[in-house]
Image (cartoon, rainbow, N blue to C red; front, top):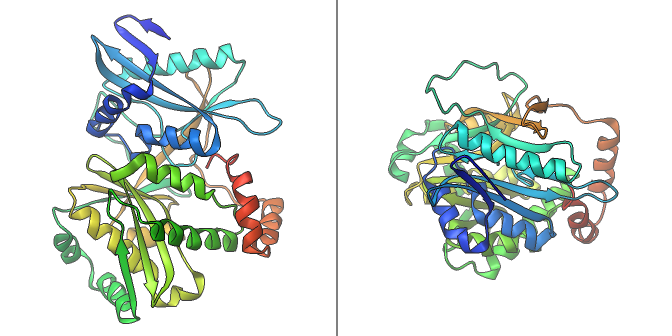
Length: 362
């Protein structure tokens, strides 16, 4: 690519995966989505091309910017950082490196006659530790829980009502198990997909392909675990957690609706939180919610705190041309499509859904 002063910007190669991940793991603003594995999974499962920019000074990595060339049918290609998740964006040692990486991405836009980058991040101030009070009403946030040194300490810190809800699931005869980090038995993958594909159909949304989840688990390796919740021998809840250094996130979790009265969600999340708390994880990202609405309240009961998601579109000059931090309601057409989708046989949605889902960047 190019050199800006002493900062060199290049496309990362697969040979630099270890170095990339080591940089990401030590960066305070990193997420598991910044790991090299995310781009590899996108390429393998959905054939979108990953462009991972790496900035160096004197042969030392000082910043990274993961980008994916996202191509929808009958439209021009566009850059996204990152698709299929809440967060991407630059990780850098300072503002100068951040600007250099964004300038390089801007060149790609101009060379390919593109207008903007879909950019998903949280606000970062490299020069000050002072944070301003922001009005979060009707805003998209991610919910972060700071974890203590052990699951016992986490349990002891829960309110009695939360502990009783977890115990309720166990009293209702639910059990849970979690995969070994370095050995994902097929039953975990099959059980997870069985639950999430059904839940997404019932929500009226297309599900990811099973190949997508296979790719995620393959490339993340020991940085991914699956938890399953059972009623007798029936899988009624499932979730995947990804880790990066001392951080964890849960991009996918689902339960079977007719068993929700037994509280499988409570046991599912406790099983995963217990696991990461006992494996040197210091923060847990519950994922995206709209401030003070349904899923927000579920996540906040665990002690998670909101952090504003800074989603926008950046033009070739690095200027913001659109901001997407405010939640919007569903249009009539979307509501109709979702209603039709809910009524389709599961075999149809599992076949057609992934063909649609690969073109939906969220």
